[in-house]
Image (tube, rainbow, N blue to C red; front, side, top):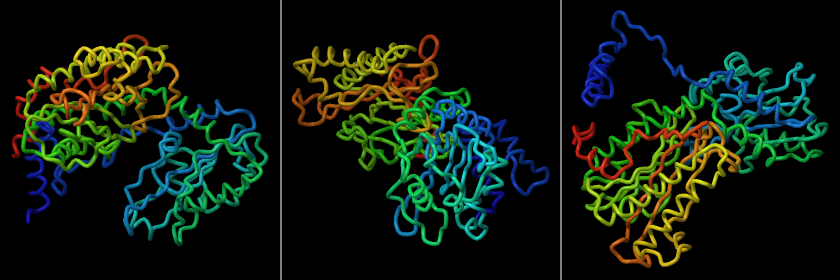
Length: 481
């Protein structure tokens, strides 16, 4: 068995050989236990800070009507099977307003200052410190940590929510985030999400909580990204593009969809992503015509296409980039014909990503191209038939959710949206069989600016000739097969 120091040297050589770290960076790498060890930062130092989250709470409060209160619940812990839970993921609205990544918490925001909240306009109820539990599930911030690190005061123990003195019946309007009514009551855990929801419902019997109104206010905030958010989005998108590039270099017949998935998700992790923003879609052949195919178990055959729809999640923010790749490195004439239509449709859509334009403008532009070109190829006989082969919208907002919150009215500066037309012709379609099992989607992440749109994911090649040229290059993963 390798010693820890030897193992680290081996790992460093691995990353060096694949170009994941530079030689200069390698010379600065510190091996634990050696003289001169220095660790300036043990954890992430580019998280959103407490001032960002405080600003978002203040922005929400400014939208709230007089005499109102808003209540947000942390996301539930979800069980995978038996005594194994899924890795915890915070509710995006809750994270946006607090920065807290722990469960069993409730945030209360008041329009006006409240005496029972020590003259504050907010309160948060969180898990108490519990050393015996923390040994198993990780350290908690506790009330002191929430006040000091997240800057939310007062922070109280979640078990005290039911006796907090908040009379929701006295407010003119009670807004609340969605209630997770299917949440389990954790045995022996006082103040869990189940208890918090029960206490809230008991105290709002004389009020009429409004979920939809809060969703609109939060959507109006979250659809416009602040600069701090754009920094994180750019990082997530860049590492996703780099993963697409390495996949293009590595791809060849004989591989499997799950090996393709392994390549892109390896790069996500090695570049610092905490997770995927959504289950990775690597669909080849007939699976390229399934929009949200995530099984990823098929063998890659020559001369099929592979639709790679992937997104790294970095500090809560997710990318969403799709490329369609010829498995053998060369588009067939039929594949290229469909691919070029989709690319033309996407470029037409991106040109409509301008402030003040209707949110649907990119979709309408893409549809027009797809209609005209499918008619010209004889794949459809009437324009309305395009829906058989392009059945989804062209755009959605992007941010803390892959399908992020937004008003979907007009495009605004610092919206980030996707532009992702596609054509999917499954076997048995009412057209010449030479088109069957050709599925193509091209998706990029677009920033709306004061001027022309910025393609944040332009790093990953889109044109057919560029993809074919890149696939001739040797990549990181060609060296280990």
